[in-house]
Length: 337
Image (cartoon, rainbow, N blue to C red; front, side):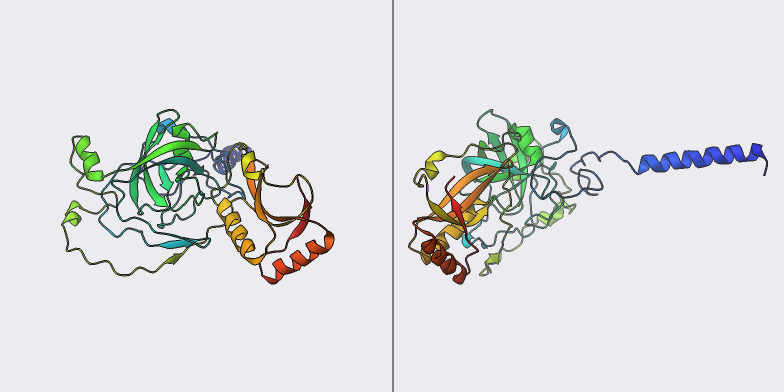
């Protein structure tokens, strides 16, 4: 083959190699609009981290639209369920719901995983998790610290903290201005989709969010509710736990602890509900004081369940045996810190 014929061939091969190189190093995908259903935001080679946190790919959240309230004519997920021994009773109608309290958010650890009603969680979607609202439903969330407001679709369960009333997607927390802070005091209000569209001066669209025609809205005889089976739902202890920055620990919660002495630590949890559950079981099994000592480790709050103070090594060994026999953990001997 002549040199004049080899040069064009080499040029083609070089171009093909460059094209392959570029395609193997694609930039993160942009966020999908609400009417797109192919995949979720983020890079194709997303590797889920062990700890929850903010995404490493950047999206301008100001361009992400709020969720659009749409009537839901199918069954909703509102069955009673149990988490860490506590039973929750979801309400059947979210339209008149209203509550004020702390909100948190969840991100990369749960990105791409199934939500409680089977949808796929997208940390750049406008969604939320709630303990008792029916799934799906829509809420307006207002940050009471700055007045910012978003509309979200509730499609997940949580957060299982005693003081937090709702868990938002990262994008929603970012739009409300508290993603870097971790939590904010908010007001949550249920939305009636029909009323919402009337306020816009428009009828409900003929094509619904689930692509079913509007004729599906014809009223059907309402069946009497059947007794519902209580669901057993056990999220990992680390669920919805990490804040972006260290959180100040309330010293008053630990002011009853002795300044020195020996203690047995039975467990350490990111989820305070898991710590409270273990504390309750230990309190029933022993007469030794049981308490929870909270501390910040690696930008995450750990709730440590401890027994004590203990006067001597012999008492510690006896307690360790009692806890093991009760199948409540493998306690280790620690000193106060």
